[in-house]
Image (cartoon, rainbow, N blue to C red; front, side, top):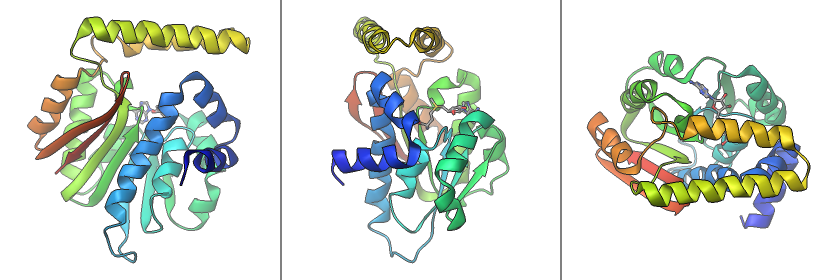
Amino acid sequence: MDDARLDAMFSGVIGQEYQTLKLICPLAAKMSQLVGESLQQIVSTLPSEQPFSVIDLGGGTGITTLAILMAGESVNVVSVDCEATMQNQAKHSLRKWTGQGRLSFDGRDALNVLKDIATASIDCVASAYTLHNFLDKYRAEVISEIYRVLKPGGQFINGDRYGLDDISTHTRMIQNEVSGYFKALIEINKLDVLEHWIVHLFSDESENHVMRETFSLQQLQQAGFKDVFLSKRCEVNVLVVAVK
Ligand SMILES: C[S@@+](CC[C@H](N)C(=O)[O-])C[C@H]1O[C@@H](n2cnc3c(N)ncnc32)[C@H](O)[C@@H]1O
């Protein structure tokens, strides 16, 4: 699907929320689509009648979950998010897929959900813009659990903020990002949203949150993943795929 049709589809289902995200942080919206495309590449090689199970960690308002559902009719998703306000929007926007039996929701936190899943039982764990919000110790536990629940050959696909190893270049990118927030949000007079994003960015950039590239890829290898790829870097945003 070309970008314009994809945009129309997402706006139609997710509504204003998607347009606002595209305005403030276009690369965040793009990451969900990259996760969906990456998944589509896997699913398209499988027999169409073979069910394909996906856990979406931090499904939020449903943008990533929708991208995952679009990857193929055989895909069944559990969308996990511990914020009821976010998840309720996804429940409403994506009710068509819940009705089809392809989508369910879990309102608990990611680690507790993963701990309840049987070992080697899931085809893919997917996520966009969620893991960078985790404290480093919690994230390490989540990664071990992701590895455990995946079937052999299963994939962890994550579109997220991965900090550059070169801290000076990284800082310049963050400065540009801040300038972008000011430009976009002052223009539409959304100073409250601007405040929220700047405050949030301090958390994203703090030492116990930031996912530095080399460390993060090594962390996945140490958890047991045999192949780990990083691609599509766009400023601090990248797609990471790890194969069990
Ligand atoms: C920035 S949003 C991303 C939403 C969606 N994936 C997207 O890209 O549009 C991150 C989401 O992760 C959820 N989240 C954060 N920590 C979580 C945790 N420990 N367990 C489950 N969900 C979590 C938040 O509630 C939020 O909805």
